[in-house]
Length: 268
Picture 1 (cartoon, rainbow, N blue to C red):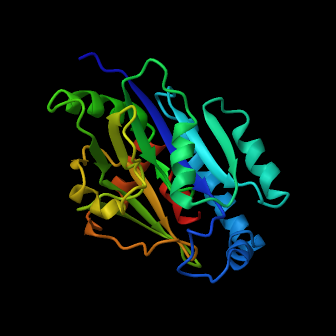
Picture 2: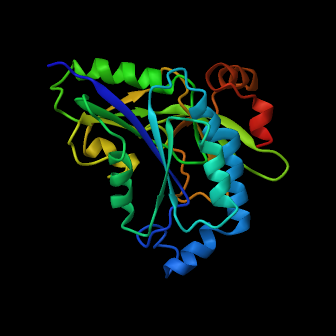
């Protein structure tokens, strides 16, 4: 069977929905007050502009589509600022959404990218405060093509990029350390499946994806930078081997794979 895959990523940038953050707030009005507060917006834009977006814009393979979901109720000047950041990038698609069911919004977001002529989709996820290595798209396509040859191409599977770096933000200087996780993270986790397969990478808790799909872990190169800060939505638990690299090696790998400096992350 001839296979041809379309690569689509999706990230959420302050989506407002009654089925997200419901464990923390009693009403959608309380949720909106939190996610659109000036302090939070400044933090999210800072991390998105300096870390997340550059990692997508500078991919070695730019033949992919990235859907950026945001609330259509996002106040000014934030809404215009986000649009201005994405407009120069033709493969970045800002999608303003209402307060529908959270997962349905994600499904519609992935589905908004046409797949004409493609047999499969390579769907990845990313948070707006994290980053991917600059070879992520090219490597994931290569892995997906090879793994489809090892099993029935109609069988969905997950690719997890489990080696990377954490930035733990703190007053006076951030801690930057290496990690090799034993379960899939949110950053870059990818679902490869035939067009028409219903679920996307947000369907299950990312740490538990191996309970639902054949799951392949790639630790060949550092694939992610994940930030830990006061506004993480989920508990940023590190599950695996950490702090094995000296500063010089961390600095080299950050430069080679992400195009960023160790000092820059410490000051992020």
